[in-house]
Image (cartoon, rainbow, N blue to C red; front, side):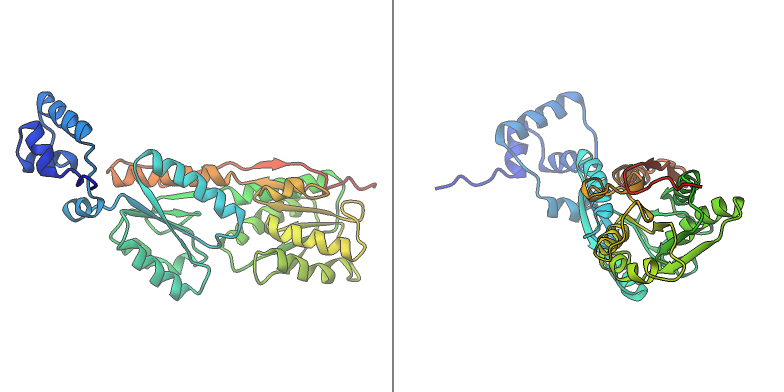
Length: 331
């Protein structure tokens, strides 16, 4: 017959203290003398005692769980963010509860409000515009937001989408491209920043930008819009895609249509997902440091939970990754 699991009373008896002392010690509610704590540690180790997480949460009001909301868990960019966040959380004794909120703003609000009741704090991605997000500041849990905020008093972690987009456009300019198009996703808050970086670069060179707007930031949408871009009367000689998924879908369909990349036109993306390295040609992109973003957001949130001061905005610098999907144009 299996021996019953040791209880808090067993620990108290072995350490020769009260059950109240054991409870306060294992829940971090009170410190004791080195002698008492050494006796408690020895009793816990010898008995193999494990505290009950549910009971502990009822006493402390803490769950040791962090909520992470992402927009599309099938997108490798968000998978990398989860990886970075989960690593930091695990090292600090926390678990991560993941939710996917790629739905309407009203459903996103319901999901996040429900999530807030089950966790000690939240890290949030959202496509809502800032004027729609005032309710987030009223959630009674620590919260870190992904992206820049002008008005809301929330700590944030953001990639430098404007700077990354400028680098992509500048790279294409230096290769001699003059007819540049942007395959964007205007429903995203980050699309505006990326479009702004591209425009700043091209305006300085007196170049126009053609814009095509996708319905989703997906492989399928890049594939769907490809023919209208490459078979039109005024085909661009370079296309900047909102993300790598759209770029990879675009490149696949371009090959089906007999358009050679990069000989006929160059293609670039954002995120530096792993797939972009292994397609032919390899995809030139901007690495937004997804895993680092997740780790940085988790570090900031745990600092807030501990009551430590944090900077309002942490901005992650991008890196241009050059591969074979771009080619210089002869003048």
